Length: 127
Image (cartoon, rainbow, N blue to C red; front, side, top):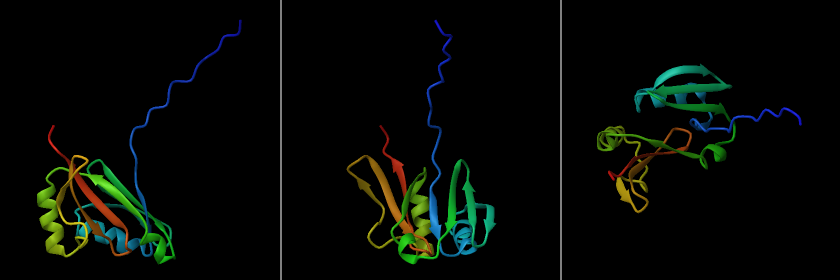
């Protein structure tokens, strides 16, 4: 009988959204200035990364506006009311995605970044 070594089962540890960006520097600045992220990397025409605590968002250079305008991601947060107030004051809340409770057990709202990416922030309802 052969000595068979089995591989450990894969475990998913996280996910990082990568959004289309027509201007990497502008995307990084928006997420830093408006949403409180920190710049990790910004190479114009190539790739960008911002982070806020354990959350990272990456940006890949794209030259087609319709791609970014049809892209989205969801970011889990706490203190959603405070974040919403900040985004409202900055004028970035999507008019069709105001703060509200959803039937799937979250409170959420959406913003649109300068390239048209929809970013939905959500907080899970207390169990």
